[in-house]
Length: 132
Image (cartoon, rainbow, N blue to C red; front, side):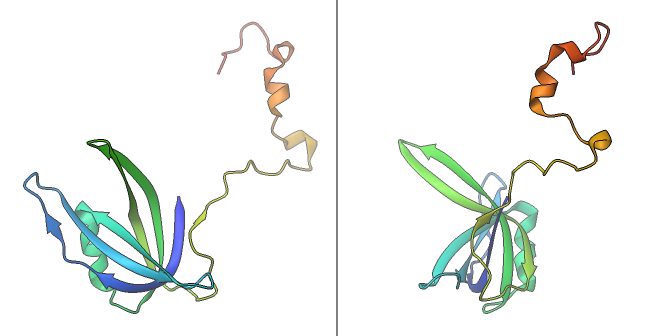
């Protein structure tokens, strides 16, 4: 999951395709750096109506995933928005990745999770234990 904060600069119309697929694009301007960045996102299917409640100039926080594909030897990247919330500050950091670091070990030894090394040590298991 990634997040970007900024103000909406442009909202496009919903595009419908013969296959029944629909998508809608929008652009936000981030202010996290010395130079503002215009970043284009897209929403698909039932998420297209989500943009109706936001207008140009609205501060937003965009939660999105990065999608990539190859077509005829060319590679494409899309920023697929799945959540849009009102409110973002100019001092907010722009695209950031949510931490995937493991949680810090607990101080209480009796409730602490075993370390990876302890899990690998087969002598901790009885013969009748399920392996997972």
